[in-house]
Image (cartoon, rainbow, N blue to C red; front, side, top):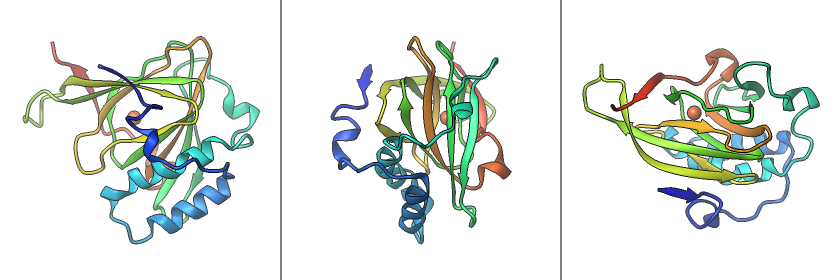
Length: 191
Ligand SMILES: [Fe+2]
């Protein structure tokens, strides 16, 4: 089923926020997340992300450019206390990521363009089974944000269906400069 994530499914709950600079967003999120368990963090980050997505000066011209291969990844902020990081990603036209899950919690929103996201669940309870079953498709448009569960399976894949690069902004638990790409495992679709 294809859901418009900028419709009632995701964003209608969120208040319209004024544009926030990266410094304002990180200060606000740092305060909001203090003392909050990880399981509550991604939903809170997604609630504030639209303010950052409305910031016109978030990224440099170089950070907006799609790479020659793969996707672009720029850590634009890492919390000094290693609580969270903000990472911008550039998805070339037609690009589809591997099906993957995350080592730490994740919220993300679309800064420019559009993302089609597919979500999955493990095909079995066997920890050695890397097959997944698709459960949902979501379309995320510019200015909208969503999150993955922090305390349950969070398998998904990202796709840019548009005719121009898409830029997304991700908030991850931990220090992305130290952790690298937030990738726990690559999954395959159940045959
Ligand atoms: Fe992901």
